[in-house]
Length: 189
Image 1 (cartoon, rainbow, N blue to C red):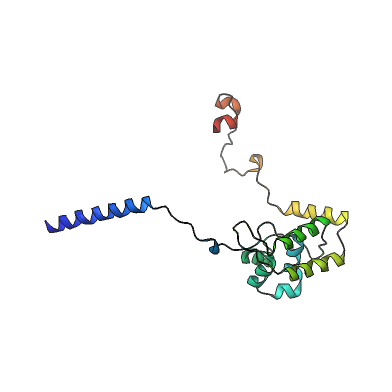
Image 2: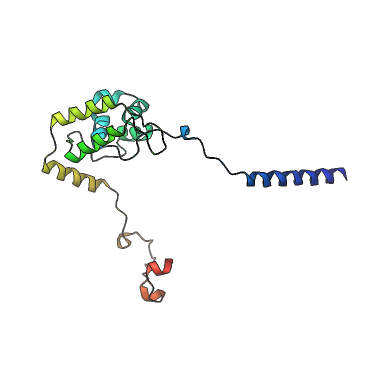
């Protein structure tokens, strides 16, 4: 009988603990656990500098991330060529790229959405921007080539007609009349 009483007491105590835990709201991590980096798309000018500038490329990923106000993973991917593959060594910035870099630099030292001061080395970023401005801006032809390379580098979703099927498998097409004339939006609501 002693074992049965012990089991009953233990289950009653665990039920009381679960009820108390459910009544207490869960707290989020304090804001200091969030990275105080500048969020958004890293300007292409800085992407080119991280990938092709010999001095910057030799720096550690963490150091570059802090200096340019981005994440270590983004810097790692840029160095490895996993993203922004359309940015080649001959890249020249457009006026929009210059404006994006200036806006990025302006965010450094200001509070981000989490209320933390956004990291970044304004002097390094400004020096990098000034170097690119001195080299000259991209021509209309350069911009067209960049846009074509950017568009061609993006993965395209397969269309149903080009989807592969198993040998002997039949492709079935469903029309609006098959579902009582309802549109996709009507079916989802």
